[in-house]
Length: 187
Image (cartoon, rainbow, N blue to C red; front, side, top):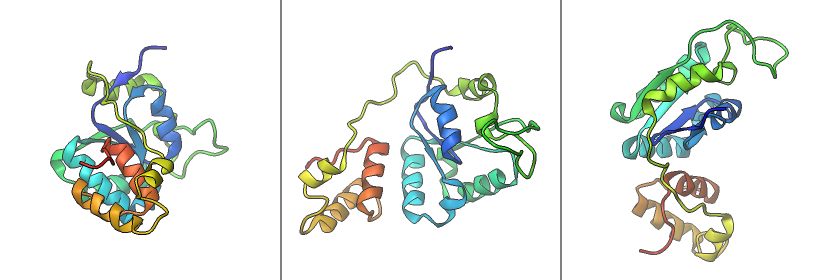
């Protein structure tokens, strides 16, 4: 198998199986919209805005009606200069893990030929390594007084303000700082 393609921008796909397929091909930070879940997840929308503004997002959705809806929605809420739309070809078929094809009858990102996916991402390849970052755990949050103690919520909210994030729950905060590569250590 060929080397993974290094991508600086974050990559956004619909679901976890799409993410799994791309993790085999890309050295990039890949995350999901959780399908239509993005429509109601204000914390994730705020995080996506921040990522689009700071490093850019490569958006790859399925070529069916649902993928088009998600794409249109994200195009309406994210800054255009930070969002790059990528497209898979509309190929009839079904994913291997499914008993039946989708309603539209097309392969999604997860079912798209890996070489086609490589071609889609090739123009965004970089020789520079993806930015190394510390990955924090809940224990790290606890040790810094950002989880599980008196005043933890207020400390977390203050750090969110400093980082330009909305107030986040501890789980969402942990995901955000790990995705963005932000430090939670005092300045």
